[in-house]
Length: 261
Image (tube, rainbow, N blue to C red; front, top):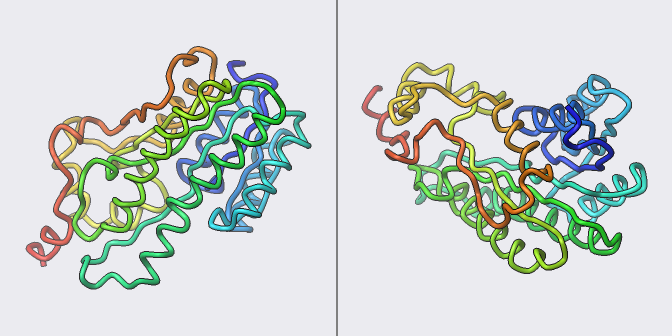
């Protein structure tokens, strides 16, 4: 595989789950990658695992200065910044009326703000270096589907989709494509706790026509394609990879767990 040979990339949330899978697939496709994450131990382990074309960069994506620094590191280390993947994010399952202002702000700062900082600062460097680039924002089916107890996450991911569209509109003429991937249920360390709960797992699988979770490697394969020249006319769209769950509806997690108990 050499679809991304010679490309310099930044991937946030790269120490585990979808971000790690994307960083791994990028390196396998020939790219060099700056891996960004707040988990120092996991970041060191993944960086060593991925070898010489991986650079670890401890990064809190809610801090624009740190995001900017990661972009500069990639450009300086690899000679160019060609691809940015904004993957870092998290949510909270809490009834809307019980969600604290602090938790709301924390989710927005990372899950929405981190994407904005990644698009803004990645695009600036791409424009300065005068060469095409691709920015991929990891969204969610929750950008389109409401979820019980997930108002902060759903709102943030809906915002991510609009950042993707606005970025494509403003940057397309500069040779920069901005695209998105909206995963459904993906088996990752972040979802393992929920999926280990038989009731929760049944609630999720019950709305997925293919009756299985998505593998992180499937999201990574789509990211490689979108970052490559094969996708050179895809701009502004967010592609759902969800086993068909958008054809039904999001599971009623709070109600389902209450009934089961």
